[in-house]
Image (tube, rainbow, N blue to C red; front, side, top):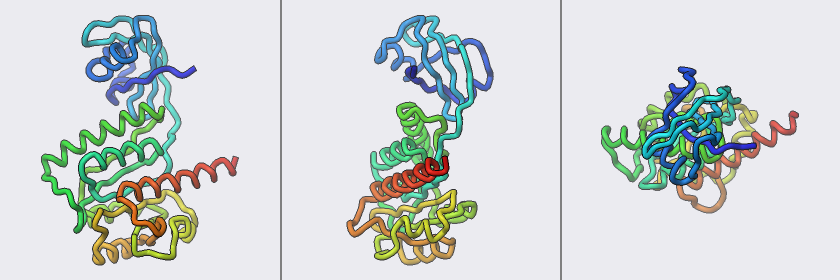
Length: 253
C-alpha cells in the first residue's frame, strides 16, 4: 500500500525524534487539499534518501503534529546522468528541472554561455537556485523518488567544464553535428557511466565554446534533423539515455 508523501527538511529524520510538527506549504496541502485527519498514516521524505512513515496526532490551522512510526533509508534511484544546460528564460528552466528530476538525473549544472539570452545578477541567481531546488523537491514527491538531484549554482560554461573530469562519457548536443547520433556518441565511449550531457542555449554555442568542449573530451551528437528548443533537447537526451540504462539493467538481471 502506498501512502501520500510530504516533504520535510533534510535534518529532521537524522535527529530521530519521535514527534515532528509539519508547517507551511506541506501542512496546508495535507489538511486543506488532501484533507487528512488525526489517525491517518502518511510518508515523509527529505530528498536525501530517508523515508519515514508517520501518524497524524493533531491538526490546527497552521500545523500538523506527527508521530514518527518508522524510519528507513531508500535505495539510490538516480541514474548516472549529469546535465550541463544553458540558462533558460522564464518557466522553461523550472520545467526542465522538474522533468529531469522525474527521470532520475543525479546533477544539473546551469551555465551562462556566449549566446545565453537571459541575464541575471548574483542576487537573482541565488533566488533562482532556491526556487529550482524547491521545484526539484516537489517533483521528487510527485514521482515518488528517493533522492533529489544536486543543482549547482549558475557558472560559466568554462567553469562547468572544469568540474566534469569524473564523467566516464561526455556528450555535447550540437545542431551542426549531422552524422553521429546520441547513441553512437555514447556507444563510441563504451556506454560508460556516469555520462555528462551538455545542452546549449537558444542561439547555439559559439565555435570557441564547441572547441572548448571538444578539448574537454566531449563528443558531439545530433538529436535529429529538426531544430529543438533547448529544454526539449536536454530532456529528450536524458530520457533516451535513461531508457537505455534501465533496459541494460533489466537485461543484466
